[in-house]
Image 1 (cartoon, rainbow, N blue to C red):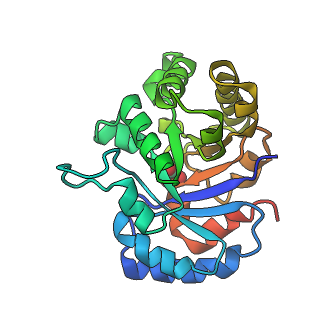
Image 2: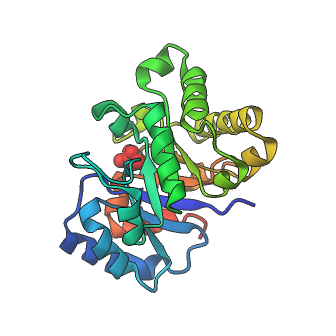
Image 3: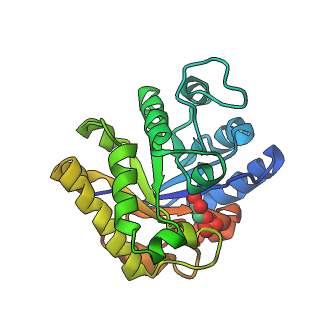
Length: 250
Ligand code: 13P
């Protein structure tokens, strides 16, 4: 059985003071969650978030990591630095990174390797753009992202890796894939994992849905068999909304 995982992606939002306030308010509302609860926050908020989440069931993650151990990479942060902050998770290859910062399947692969080597769990994002979808390329794009992005990883790595399927056209737009469509596409990703890696990997790997997931649609999405959780943007910034999603099964 795969444990559901509901993760927030704060993107470039919240100061340290706002981080402390949000987690203090959120913690009692999610304490009885059956799902794993994660907040991925800006680098500058990690230490505050870890302190505020101490003794709670909320795990803290980063939103990116560089693959090199150290060196001349202005503006980047290494896995060892995140490890020192006791980061539990890190988002890798988010579509905004792919779109605005030149992230490729190759860099996704290197960042994922670095995270795993530091024992930080990677949340690897995949998903097609609106144009790719309209041109019937969804499956082809997902195959490339999965095969190239996760090339070389072994069965034990997939105990740690979480995949987030985020159709780019659904992010921040209010458009959600229907629960059935999201389930079908995530089922396809699972089929790819079985075909390109191993059946046991397909069975154990957790795959989230992301893209305008909110209090209105979370229950329906989470009912689907293939969907093991959510990666939540906008709704993860509000304690009540995020708590509602985390408690989708109550
Ligand atoms: P929204 O939930 O704001 O659409 O963002 C989704 C997302 O990008 C999570 O990583």
